[in-house]
Amino acid sequence: MTDHTTPDFPRNERIAGLIEQISAYIEHYHHGSVELVGIEGDSITVRLGGACADCELSTQTLQGWVAGTIRQFFPNAIIIAVE
Image 1 (cartoon, rainbow, N blue to C red):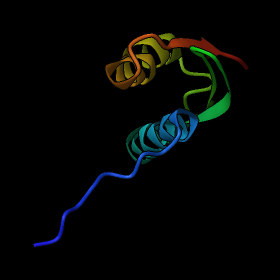
Image 2: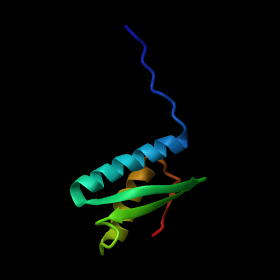
Image 3: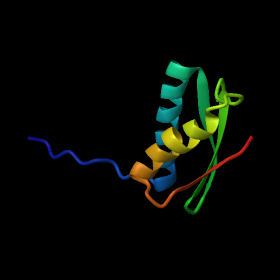
């Protein structure tokens, strides 16, 4: 039997990968996107694009879906949106 261990990726890489997965979901189901702009400490800056950029529900998407999902894995994260 082989002993399997989970790779220990750096925090920023895990955040970037999570945002890519969130974006893939948003692209597939809503024709929008979320892009990682930068990470500085607990502050994660993102940009909504595609159909999400001009959507009246973009605030709910950002806080509910994007920030909520990120905080499940990184509870101290502060999500900041830029245009």
